[in-house]
Image 1: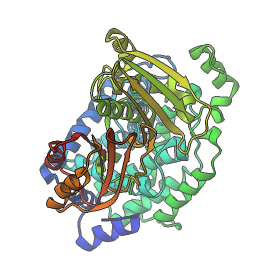
Image 2: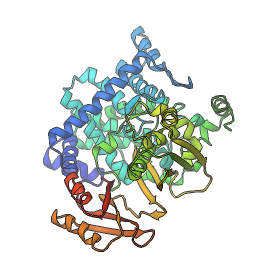
Image 3: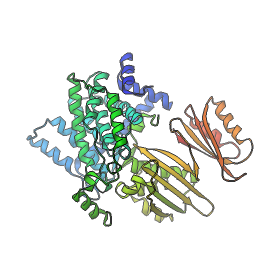
Length: 291
Length: 220
């Protein structure tokens, strides 16, 4: 049983196994299910993620029309060969956006760790997949590695926008993804923790200010940034860069920032982008009497 | 620890757009339905905090009603639940509350039919994970950190020892326990927090005891 990232890394390194394996062992102990049953269960989640990305890349629109279609625009842009950023990075962004566009359209997704932040983990996984060619089993491991880091954040801080702002949702998702990318790319458990720390540091203080209270603006594009942040941080950690502030302390800082965040900036649609003239106008157009 | 499973983090599979405001809301609705034991004739749903402010955008309303209709978080009928409820003859009304609650995502659900009613308060703490904090005005002091079950039973002598004997036989240790009743000899509740996971067969055994009407898992 691990209570924080330091213990998780120590467990994996002392047993000389992947972080994914520590999460699988803990799940077996907690649930009483067999390894096969647990892998099977995660495989189903992976399938849902694949289907959501596939659907989003064909183009979806939300009921309000606020979001949808951006994943397709980005894929077409990549194909044009004019992209300034690397194709892998933009592919991750596009697939993260695809997932969140499906979510906004009330489609079926897998929360990772929440629905509003459901794009980052699958978006980065399916983009990195093109380069690293993982097996199905390795892709499932990617999700368990993500789960292990998310598990620490959920228990020691928060994964709720209403409690801790967007840093707790897309921030957590991005940190989870960064750590899992490092492990899939052959990095060590310590490097995975460094990637999580670097990612989350860059998202501290991010508020939850959904226009009209909808999981659309700015949520979809925050997943885009989260995916690119995760890949950049993973590369930094794989290059040997470390975080001066240990991962557990970054998580704790995120928690404390969330506690002091005004209610208007925690999923109440009363502050930030939701309170801009355009944010209010859109809300009024969508809900009529809505303030 | 409030989250104990990898699938609390990677999961649930759900209809969007929000794990706390849609999936969590559906789960609270479904617990209310399970406790009620059947489809109610009428449901009054009171939303607080962030639920009250953003329910329309997040589909919290359709999700709670979907849960009351016994839909799971990934049921594609959730977006249409208000119409489905109407067709099924279930009267639904919402109240938006200003009262400040301990948790920003709080909902109170009241279910009725000719011969019974139920009132439940639940909170959605993030990522689709929920806690039931109140049942029939009885505060459930669950830490959320240990597995817990709720036993609904008739208020008769010996029932507490029958339940605890079943747990003892399966080597399950009780960490915390509360009993409550509305009136002597009527329906009563037992909330039991334990140290080990309670498997389905143990739940069935308790449910099979004389004078026990329902056993519900409150915390995995």
